Image 1 (cartoon, helix red, strand yellow):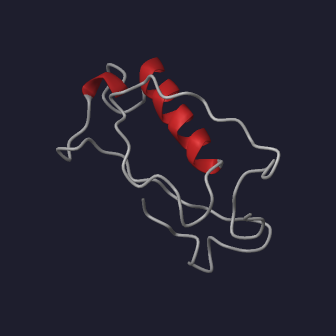
Image 2 (cartoon, one colour):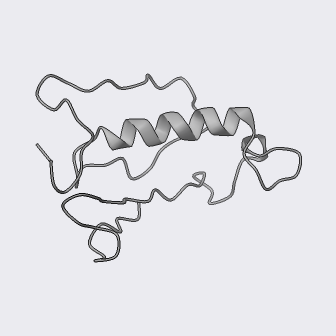
Length: 94
């Protein structure tokens, strides 16, 4: 996980960006994530990466998932908790 929130261009009290690095355990990419043009994501790629992004946005800053098995699309979709009913950023971490 590349945490770019410390860069002044990407972090403020109103906005924080934390960019995940995506790759398999071997360091390569699964072609099923891409459309026929090999540039855009496929429906499958959008679904898996969207779920991964959503789930990491609900994880506390500093405790984000750093390695994910994107080939396992059975991970449940996380929901905000009562203790932390918001997306986790530097400005509103629990």
